[in-house]
Length: 366
Image 1: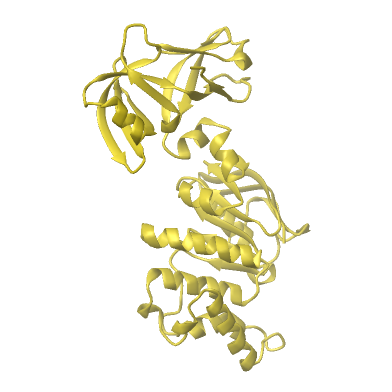
Image 2: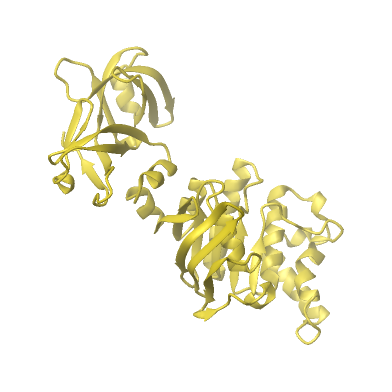
């Protein structure tokens, strides 16, 4: 089932949770709502579910306005961060609950309920725990049971609110791989809320970046990572180095580094901010006339095939993070405190003016 939200607005007192949000969620896709706490992602999820009413705007399910439908009519399955399992019920009865409370005319027979519940428990690979109680399960197992319970009523849409947020890192990584495999098998339109950018990029078909109640960017994991639409998206998705400077006459000047920016050729003089990820930073030993930003090596950590460097700029004292192959770091015989030159291989530049064109990714020629 496809979902659309049109011009959704929601306020809580003086706080604007959602500000004119419009989005389309294609049928059968797994979409991540990603952003910092308070950006509006959970409020949007609850409005789609029918658990919150928007102040303005509409929600469409498969082209039909569902704004006035209650939760049951929308046929959504909801999985919360903290499982919300019934402690006094066995695993089997927790999963069966949604089927047993259906109106008599729609309620399956006991035999059919048993068959369906056991099929779902096999699907989430926990049929051997059917007679146990929630307190006897691990956190990861409880979350899989919560998902099985949401699927029992055959929802047309599956909504997940920080589903793995309460779990430790190792279990979280295992479960998100499992969720991706499960979605590929079921193809239910699914929306999940997370503030974990690694989780969103690893699991989702599409990522919706949200900030302060508005949508910053929508795209595939690769699109939002490689071609961020705003400084917020760039800084939110992974580690990034920030360089401040000026744009003028088709060039961007960032301290000792100057690079061409033809798309900003009409800018006479305006503030500019450039972003480069650690793997886009090149280093070499300092020598007079070397092009780049002089810096001193303050930290070196080799993890497997990668060397991670922290360098303190000579001009501003700011820290630049770089990642280079461990073999290159070994060949350079780097020593803490020595002088190096930092040179971004690729930058994305944003010019701070009202009529600025879209950001330009710049590749520096060696």
